[in-house]
Length: 406
Image 1 (cartoon, rainbow, N blue to C red):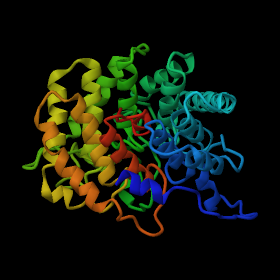
Image 2 (cartoon, rainbow, N blue to C red; image 1 turned 30 degrees about the horizontal axis):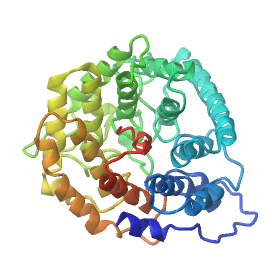
Image 3 (cartoon, rainbow, N blue to C red; image 1 turned 45 degrees about the vertical axis):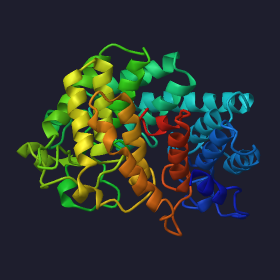
Image 4 (cartoon, rainbow, N blue to C red; image 1 turned 180 degrees about the vertical axis):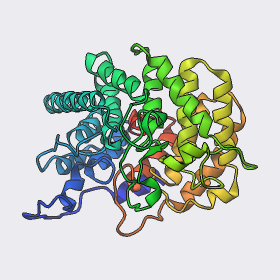
């Protein structure tokens, strides 16, 4: 199935965008790890490294990803622009394109320094962060993940980790939440929502845009021996915050996706049960972040709790019935990839028992992408193929770092 999906992405379509340079032009998807050519190049490059096909497809998709000027501006991050293409080159063609990678590394380093300066000024002024200041998709967590793979011994990664430690401290902001809210409380409205309950901000618990991504990056760095002052305390602060918001149910523990001010004041979420299980927001991603935190801190009790939450979530037919997408971000591929990596680290045997059943679900739905759905790594069929490839070859190839699950 992985080969079949890869074959459908053998070569980029012949598309001429002309002079369409609007911000929402589809041409910009080329430099997207999530939705475009950069992510597809990763798929083909990792397949080449296992002797599965030649380099033509990888080179064609890399050429497509770089045919326009790469952005290193406000919208750039691990999933888009110069960092995304640099990450793709690093994975797809190790040892090659060193000149291009050096230039991309320099662009990313400058981007990180600019973002860190802005974040420090924001903290000094006691203002709330945008979620995109710190998130995985285009914030400092994602840029930190890039540095963890490209420059793990560098001072800049440690500056990002220092920033994340600071992010775990409350800010005396002049707003309704004040110092009661955690340091990652944001005034941003969730995408697509116009609910008045978010008028006073919210805390996001998800992996894509929330604090569990910061927890996962801190944990992964610590497991590689990279630490800064306050590192363990920051992981513990996030872990304890998640403990407060973990909810019991007959089908197992769950966490809300976000916490509003009313919920913060009441000390409980205003929903009765879990939303859709997924890597990006649901129990699978949060539980994996908790497991990584436990492994970093050698906290056996927390590890067992995280693994129990994941196992029970993925054994609950009612929760699994809500999954309607095969892709990595919020579909079957993301659930399978997360569970597969969690099982590799698990000490509780039940964590691995449901993997075969989940894999069957992914295989059954692998072709269920909508005609207008993205074709990239995070949101498209390239990610489905790469998940299946990793399991079939029993290798990760570094790509799961873009999800912070390994």
